[in-house]
Length: 210
Image (cartoon, rainbow, N blue to C red):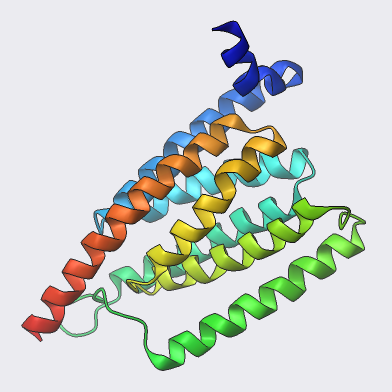
């Protein structure tokens, strides 16, 4: 039993108690944010902002710049998403859940490419392009940037990007030594699958109603 515990959590031996506590709090609010997103609930944004702000601090402290940029971007896009989700499209209706348009697909491709270049430049500038983790970080950052943008715009396909990125992040964060965060992404994957199914159903209902 001790061997199993050590396998998952021995990397925390040298961490400060406050940092471990903050990571757990950030994980809890991260779960809440993804759950509220699945439920199509506006609370996705305030809970997500709490989680991401904590992670920005921790990841900066741990010198994980790629991960820090992802969370800083999440925070900014949460502000944008909060506005989009509450914006009235007419006198009584807010922005509905819908599928991605052709123009939005093109924009998604550009966001993906621009993110790859941006993260690569940052990693090279800070001499952090040192191994395979940097390559994976760059790709997952681009995937999550697109996913967050689509979620902020209430697009069904955002969940596909979350699922792909989450699946990559589960072993990646465990390898980096953040077991709680790795477990968080495992939970995110499960919620994202249900989220995709729920949003697709809501999108179909909106189309029929229209």
